[in-house]
Length: 285
Image (cartoon, rainbow, N blue to C red; front, side, top):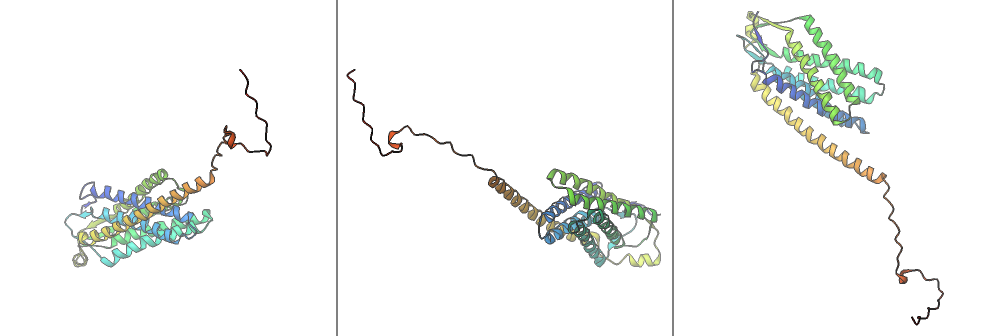
C-alpha cells in the first residue's frame, strides 16, 4: 500500500476549502431567501445553485484536492470529466432548490430534494476523484463510500432546510458555517475511502494522460471565484435595495404627528365678525 497525503501543504488547503464552502453557502442562502420572496424565483434559484453548487461544493472539493498527493506517484486530471463534475454539482443543487422552493409541501419536497441533491453531490465528488489519472492502482472501501453518501444526503437535506427557513444575516452565517463543516466532512470521508497500490502496466499507461492539477484547477477555481465575486455584488445590491424599500414602506405606514395649532394674540389676525364694537374711553387716571 502506498502512503496517501491529504495535507501536502499543511492546513492551507483545508482552511481555504472551508472558507470557500462558507462563502458559497452564505451566497446560496441569501439567493434562496430572495427566491422565496420573489414572484419570479427562477433567476435567484440559478444564482443560488451556482453559489452553493459551484463555489460552496465544487471549488471546495478541488481546492482540498490540491493538497492531496500519493507518495511516489504522479497525479493528473481528466479535463472533460472535471468540467462535467462542476456542471453536475450546480445542476443537482438547482434541482433540489427548485423542488423545495416551488413545491410548497415541505414534508415531501425536503426529503426528496435532499436525497436528489445529496446523491448528486456524492456523485460529483467521486466523479472528481475518478477524474484523477495516476500511475498507481486506486481502490475504494465500499463501507466508507456508503458512509460518505449518507453524510452527503443528510448535509444536503439540512442545507435545503436552511434555504427554506433562515432569514437574518446572523442566522445565515451560522448556518453557512455548519454547511461548510458538513461539506468538508463529506469530502474528507470520501477521500478516506481511497487506497493506492503499486501500479500495473495499465495504470502506468494511464498515468501519462490528463492535465497537471495546477494548470487545470487554478484557472477553473479562479473563474468560479470571479463568478462568486459577481454574485456577492448582486446579492449586496439586492440587500441594499430591499433595505431601502423596507424603510420607505415603514415611513409611509407611520402617520406623521399633527402639528399643534397655535393661537395668535395679534388682534389683526383674529377673524372679524362684521360688527364694530365701541372703544373704551380713556380714563382720567
